[in-house]
Length: 267
Image 1: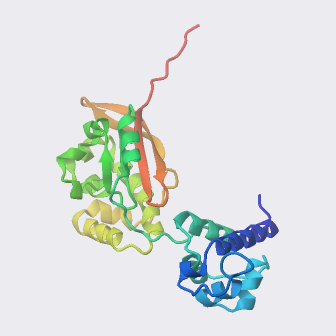
Image 2: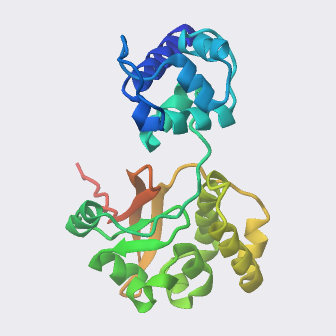
């Protein structure tokens, strides 16, 4: 486990290297005379981030001082950090990731689409709102996504409004609350979103079951296990799991693999 001292040293090194890779022109400052050291000066970063030079110097020296999330966001903006670098900054400074912006990415990257179609199991990709962005033919056989227009392919919505999908899930009354409690994790992560609360509000108006279970505030941690689906009118066990395929865009690949039947050996 990292010690706090090492974390502060890593933070100091990270800030220094990110500062040195930027030129004054990158942040809208005049270049001026030739500089003895590369990159921005500490006083320039401090001014752009809205803090005092002494305080920022202490931070970059690895001293034990507290920083707010607002300041870290300002610093990430000044240093022009991408999403992965911003997350790294928060992990070093706060030992936890930043609050999720809650944007629901609605485009499926080609490589993820190819991976999904190459799988020999039912698979589909969802975003933070649980919109189904893509699915392979085997997944369509199990969940009938193609019956719905692309803008209506939301897994949570279909789970509580589509009788066909509900009939495909054995013991729907037990499985639906578990899936809903898994969705609540994403709902909490997307604290700044607007379209996700709108989805919840619509479902509360339409589905009494959703309204009842949603207000129980249950949270399911792992998104994996065994779920029975109807195949040729017979319940068949499937092992399912959720794999993050794009962390920055909150895209997850959900895979259902038919559970192999255990065979017993007789002596």
